[in-house]
Amino acid sequence: MLKELFVLKNGTPLFYWSGESVDEETIDQSLLSSGILSAISSFSEETRSSAVDSFTSEKEVFQFLKLGKFNAIIVGAFAIDITEEMAKLVLNHLKSELLEQEIIREETLNELNAVEKEDFAKQIPNLIANMMDDEIKQSYLTNLVQRVEGVFLAYSIKLDSREVNWKYASPPPMYRSEYLNDTLLIMRIATNMIQKLGLGENMKLLTMQNKERIIAISDNGYNLNTIVSSLAARDKLEKVVMRMGYQDSLLGSIEIGDRLAKYQFSAGNLEHHSGNAILPPNAHIFLTTLMNNVSNIFGKIFRAAEAEFVRVVYEQADGEIDLLVINQDDQGKLFITVY
Image (cartoon, rainbow, N blue to C red):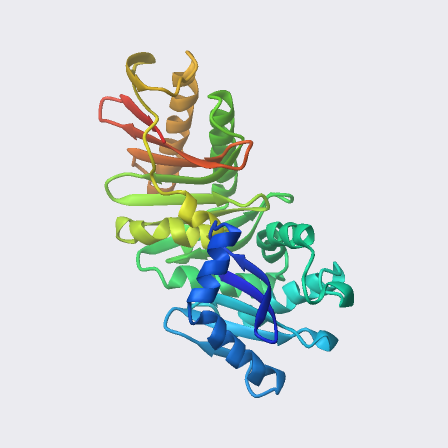
């Protein structure tokens, strides 16, 4: 959804946020060395004269808004597939927050307070996730999943009310109300597993697949978002389910990195271990519980199918994103890799 956010005055960036994790020095070099800043500045001048409020590049949509009396402008760079209505809605909301929190004010206009900028930057993903009314949100989600070939079921569960607040099914009978409790249960089991294994604190993404089907569930702290598809959509599914929860900024953090350890379990016994990461002696209990419930949810949706491969993306206490991969063979042996 939102990829970058700028606040500009006379072509000078007062504030910059990126959905990707980059340090301030990299940001400064990137902005100064690219043509993005000059292009935005040029269009922002036209925006101040009400000549234009958006433009589209090959990969992005840029939306502009004036910051009232401050003679500055806020610019959002959005993914190319966003609707104009959604882009304006997001940017107006962030503009309101900048003004209401008084991050933009007369005495700081030429140089914004560094601490306030950092605090606001951390708020942006959650501000977007909580801003939209149901009608706009449902339109956005439907448009998002319909663009992916092979998706035949998707739904979003609001965690505080434990209710499905949006669903998509093709054909419609594909969705059944019992999936709500199954989804809540499996994410609770996955969270309990990573905590008991001493790996992390919070679940971010659970991906389950076999030879024909794949299920992905993301957790942004407010909603559980689920997509079910054929393997044809495998390469796009994790990206889409994270975007459903406005978690675009995490996408670059869930690539497979250096392998820390490998394990092999058979009938509850550890047969092989290599690497530095150490799982507790009872690890197989939590791993087997997860895989049994994964098979259960596959069986309910597809009537008879077991999962063979599971990716668990989780967050550590320090905010670092890590990955656990589980493979299960035909004899029930579990092969675990910690990244």
